[in-house]
Image 1 (cartoon, rainbow, N blue to C red):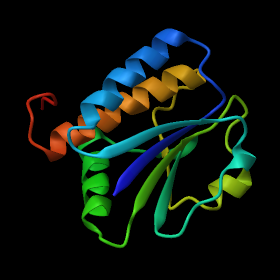
Image 2: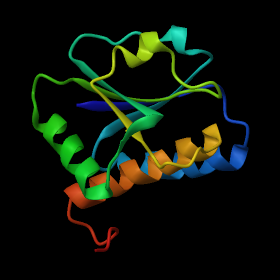
Image 3: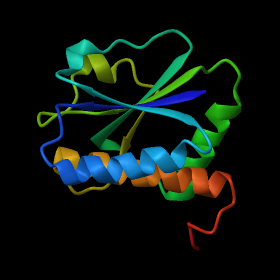
Length: 140
């Protein structure tokens, strides 16, 4: 399975991109992961054999272990070739994109600036794979 993280609109802060690059490199030890930046959400349609998870303030909140468990389950399902995570732009995610999503998750009840949400998600994705692989990164 390949993981693709989609962010709508280019990063405003180069420092956030630098942090995302660190997590992307760390994750490459366990999974093929791509970081995609698109201009607007009309640029996306879900390919066959894929799952889409939207990150939206109206989604459900998960803890890190639950997120890891969901990702691990999808990773073990041979029918799933791509797992997309979608971070909307400043005006959220369009209904057309939300309608394609298997699930919708909220990072918090707080609203984050897009670059910050993007970086937080990458850290949580890395944390998920640390949980899955039993490293000491995540503490209970």
